[in-house]
Image (tube, rainbow, N blue to C red):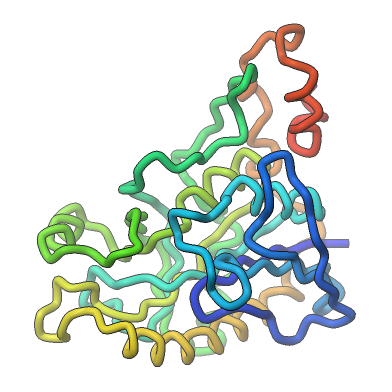
Length: 284
């Protein structure tokens, strides 16, 4: 069965329309994921949903166990992953309430673990194009058919948080040509690539960060009001994209680890092989 994972960010703590669903607890070598996974079906597709910050929104961006979250998706057989995320807009044309499908990242996080490798095994995957182009095009087409305000392409600045940007930082990111700013998606994308999972961000613009003084500074109450409307649109987009998922993948995401593991196989610790079996067994 074709499989799709959905990571829900702020405002999206459960996917509507999942049939025969149940919460499934997953253990990983990297600790506990953010929450249990809600696993069911939509339109003949296996759907796995994870609330990124936990039910009740209990986990800061810096506290997220990204490795456990993505490992759990892989263990449950997910081949494609959509990360729904609230973001601030860095461009006037991306108005609050609009959707964005970014295709690039700039990393402004500090010290977050963003690889499954190490501890005796080294791998270097390609990350020039961090999102799955096929998945972006599918989501873009569905959004346009729904007449949703969508921007396809652009750069996502991933900041540490949990505080929002200073005005100086906001102006700096705009001078770089960045489009949106958020706190979570970069590590998810890197780990999804290592796990050979197609990845796309469905970003929900909630505010103009703080560069646009005409719009006023970021106010959390206003963000949440816009976010609730955006979440409903995002769920529509995902629900209509599901029946259009192809049974097989033709993109390069599914073999991203091919030739990436450079460690002498005889020198990889057996314990690490066992920990990463879900990810690397076909190459070792």
